Each structure stands twice: as C-alpha cells, then as structure tokens.
Image (cartoon, rainbow, N blue to C red; front, side, top):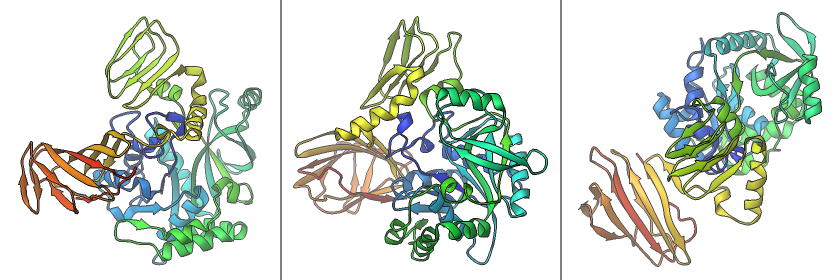
Amino acid sequence: MLLSGGSGTRLWPVSRRAHPKQLLPLVDERTMLRATLDRVQGLPGITQPLVVGSVAHADLVAADLREAGFALDRMVLEPIGRNTAPAAAVAALVLAEGGDDPLILLLPADHVIDDGDAFVAVARRGAELAAQGYLVTFGVVPTYPETGYGYIRKGDPLNGDAARVAEFVEKPDTTTAEAYLADGDHLWNSGMFVFRASRYLEELEMREPAIVAACRRAVAAADRSHGILLDATAFRSSPSISIDYAVMEHTDDAVVLPLDFGWSDVGSWSTVWEMGSGDDRGNVIVGDVHARDVTNSYLRSSHRLVAAVGIDDMLVIETADAVLVMPRDRAQDVKDIVEFLRSEGRREADEVPVSHRLWGLEELLARGDGYRAERLTVLPGAEVTLRPGEAAGASCIVLAGTACTDAGAREPGTTFPVDRDVTVRNEGPAPIDLLLVRVDAPPLAERSGSC
C-alpha cells in the first residue's frame, strides 16, 4: 500500500498542493510515486500495490499506475485528507474484501531508498514479524542530528535486530537531536509500517472506533467507476489522526526494525541538493542555468534562463510563476513562506501554472478581470471536453495538429466557438495544441477529459 497524500509545502515552488512532490520527478526522470511502484515490484510475493491519494490528484496517480502496468482499480481516492490512520484503515478494508487477511506493507510514495536489495531484506524481516501478530515500523539509523524528523526510541530487544518500541518522540531541537545521535537508542521515524490487516483494524477499533466506522461506510458506498472514490460524507466524518498517535504509541505489540542504508524522505531543497550529482564545485544544476563563481549550491530552472554569479551554499529554484532564493541552511523555512502566501490569498502558494491531466497538459497563460486564457496539449489517442461554464463567450484556436470534433476536423489556425460542450479528439500521431479563451469566466472552470 502506497500513501500518496501530502501538500508539498517544503519543496515549494515546484511542489504545491495541486501537484505535490510525490508526483514530481525530483531525483530522476520518474515521479517519486512511479519510483516507489517500481521498487515494490521487486518484493517477493507482493500483490499489485494499492495507492491511496487525493481525488484532486486522480489524473496524476492514474498516469503513474498506467505507465507502471497497473489497473486503475488499484487507486483509492480520498475526497478530503484525513491523515494516515484513516488512509491505512481504508486500505486494510479494501484489501480484505473477499475474506482475505493480507499482510500490508505501508510505504509513503515520496521516499528515496538507495539500496534496493537491503530494502527487500528488511521488508521480508518485517513481514515475518507481522505474520506473528506484531505491528512493525521501520526506524532509520541516524547519520547526523536531524531536527526535521520525529524519532523512535528502542526498547527491549525482541530477537535479532528487532526491538520493542519504547516511545515515539516529536521533532527535537538541535541539542536533543545531538544527544539522540550519541546514545544509539534513537532512530529516525520513517513512517513505513508492515502489519496484518485484521491486527491493524483490531487495534484501531479499540482506540479510535469512529475512524473504523467512518472508513467502513466510506468504502461500502464508494464509487468504483474510475478507481475507488470514497464516499465523501462518510469519510469526512472520520477523525484526522496519524497511525503513530492512533495505534503505535498505545499498542503493546509495536516493534521497530532498523534501516541502516541510504534513505531520505526528500523533505527539503537542501536534501535534493545532497542527493543530486554535483559538479566539481559542489553545484547541482537542473535546467537552463548559467553559473559563474558559484559553489555548493542548487540551481534549478524549469521555465527560463537563470544566471547566478558569486554565490555559495544557496538554493535558487525558478518556475513559471515564482522564484525562491535562500541559503541552504534555511531550507526548512520554505513552509513559512507558503503559509504567508496563503494568508495573503496568493494563488502561487497552492496552484500550478501547468496541470497534468490524463489527456495531456493544461497551462494557464493569462487571466484577469473577466478573462482567462489557457493552452491545452492533447496527447495522441486522447480526448478532452471543452465546456463554456459560466463564460459569456468562449472560443478555441487550434495552434498545432488537427483537432477532431463532431463538426469535423479543425486544422491549425482554425477558430471555433465553445458555446456548448465540445469534445476534441486527437486521432493523429503527435500532440495537438489548443488555445482556449474565456470571457467573464469563473476563476476555476470545470473541465473533464478521458482517454
């Protein structure tokens, strides 16, 4: 089971609520979700993974599932975020349908693990313990005094390298983190678990029965036409709480296994710099960047030329609508910027100028009082339905390719009105580009498309 939630605050401006980090290619050419899907396929005895994510990201999750060779019925969509305990409960209920009681390996979709063989070995060890009735979590052996992670304190040894969980500890200050590193009893809390479905539901129902009841209703009334869309009314009634708080801190059967190999949750731009392939001056450069007398910095351009001169230990991240510049040692402060932008009502805090859809791309080019202009890129074999919404007038210009509509083929340079729903199909071998202009359009006009 893969958790694909999260709002992407710490990797703004590339990661945003509308397109969070797990659905972005930050480490290699794959999205982090796709990399995780590939990783779990190497586990012996694994069934098709189940991805739990937001309905707002349905197109992005579906695209990764399809490219990895999995069916859309492996996608559970949350109408609202309710933290990890309800997400895991929903997964346990879905996976136990038909009378099964499987072992569930729960993995966040936004982690990077360097040693795949070591991961397989420790996952198998966790499965062995979970089969005995334990609820197993994985703790990363710390390599430096990190203040951005929670910690797990090891208790009495169980057998081998496993230990009972003595306590979960909140993110510490620097002095406390240094003490944790020195004592050898504390591990970073990875947020990864393995347990039997029935054991997790049993423990959760003992302590948070409202969660289990709400999730049962949400699964029973789910819309299964495209994935598993949980019933909104039922799921909204669930308390929002993490697995740690709901179960792991209270059960007598919590066990921790150490992970002593390369692991990261890619929680900041500084971490992305550390994981990148640096040049001989310690710089990681992505995109159209010119750097002169620059050292130990991360420079990323996704839209235009970025030029930097005479800087050291800096982060410079450029997108189509925002630029972030800050020292690397202040990387955790990005979340404060996002909170400020939200308080000011700035759309750049959460929206993205380019949205990925199952049918292609939707790029906001311009908007103002009474108008909105978008470029739509429709992939070969896909179709999109253009809707006028509440616009007083809307029209579409074919920029490239041939757009097939019920009224016939529209060649490049053709303009046609969108005064009713118009379905555009791409029957050619290359993408087609459209310019959609609305007058007196609402801020967010609904559009649906399917392949």
